[in-house]
Amino acid sequence: MMNLIDEGGKRLDGRSFDQLRPFSMQAGLLKSASGSAYIEQGGNKILVGVYGPRDSRSRYGTNQDKAVLRCRYHMLPFSTEERKSPQPSRREIEISKVIRDALEPALLLEEFPRSVIDIYIEVLQSDGGSRGASITAASIALADAGIPMKDLVSAVAVGKVNGHLVLDLSDTEDKEGEVDLPIAVMLNSGLITLMQMDGKLSEDEFRQAIDLAMAGAKELREAQRKALVQKYFKEVDS
Amino acid sequence: MEDDKAGRYVLPGDFLGSGEYKSWANAIKIGDKFYATRVGVLEMGEDRIRVIPMSGPYIPKLGDVVIGKVIEVMPVAWTLDINSFFNAFLPAQHAFRSFDPERDELSNKFKLGDLILASIAKVERGRDSMLSLDGEGLGKIEEGEVFRISQVKVPRLIGKKGSMVQKIEELTGAQIFVGQNGIIVAKGPPESITKVKRAIEIVETMAHMSGLTDKMGDLLR
Image (tube, rainbow over all chains, first blue to last red; front, side, top):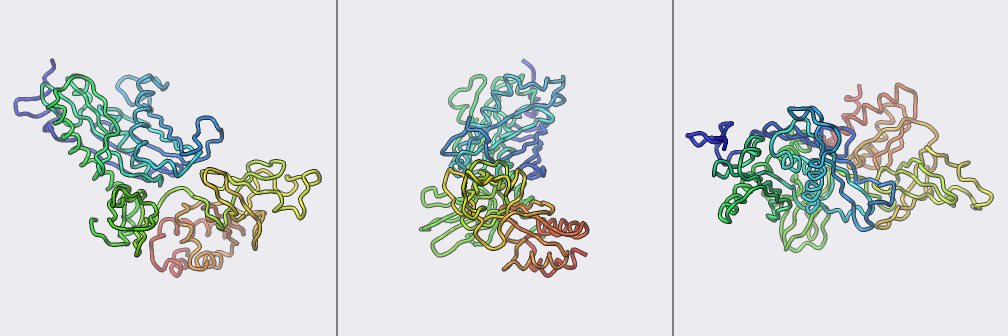
């Protein structure tokens, strides 16, 4: 097993176990999209554009009672170390689906029957935990688009490396570690909208992992709020 | 931002207050607590609570005057794109004196791509809304330059009793049509149009500024 934690109890990138990677978020940077957001988290650089609610132009795939949410997670060819084919891979199709499912519970889609809302997620540079970062950013973009939502969704991964529970896995920790547990949560209600797990955890460890994720999500949520405040209220105050 | 004060800025998921409110808008009730669902400004009344949104799509409201683009000519009605998540119908009766489908050809009146100033006559959940041309000045807009503005800023562009739009018309010499749906058409010589474009940008970026109508003259110079 690769040694991912040094004698001083620090991780490869010098972080402590419960520390997030450096992150920054920005809201509303695309002019033609209804809402947009950009996030950097560790090595992740992700741009999200939301279009809609809009007329679907065809009956197919619409719902008479509510808006249909569509999501595309896509990695650009230059986002990885080796060129990635721009075709959607099996992994991207799966991630698109789980992101959609993680965001849908937060949205009040009943307000726009028969319409569609599209979320386009472009990964410009990828690192570990890109699905979490995508959800965090997409949530900002949806709020920016004015889609009514119960709460912002914040997402982060918890993992186990060399027997220690750690927050916000980097790519190496994700690949070499024992467990990867991405979680998305609506913090007001504590509802978890995404949970996937690779590897094994004891019940005790699992509880601790959830607590760790909640603390991380809280920190991310503050940043999500700041990004929106920056766009909407900064100029008001100045 | 935890104070109960009205007028504060709120984001989706923010706690607004708890209690017996009879009506609420852009907010959600969980138990007896209210949370915001949109980015906006909080407004609280005796028994109502609402968030005035700062972004979002245009939602058709009865009586709104909108500018739509003809995207389909059907046998007895036109379909218009009104910059919303639904299209809208304009029945042919509104354009012809006594409409006879056998005699009257709809495309003689409004063609594909025409811009039409119309009012919303009927809104139904889950259906395309219905338009009407009953009202002063409603009908086809013959010429002009099209602009867009976020629909939440339209009230600012119109101003109190139309004061802002009148002021801009005065300052630029252009004739301006404003739809509640965020579509604007300006008619006039090219230099007027350039000024109108500037004016719209000013409203878009400085909508929050008080006394903007009076400052517009200086800002446009």
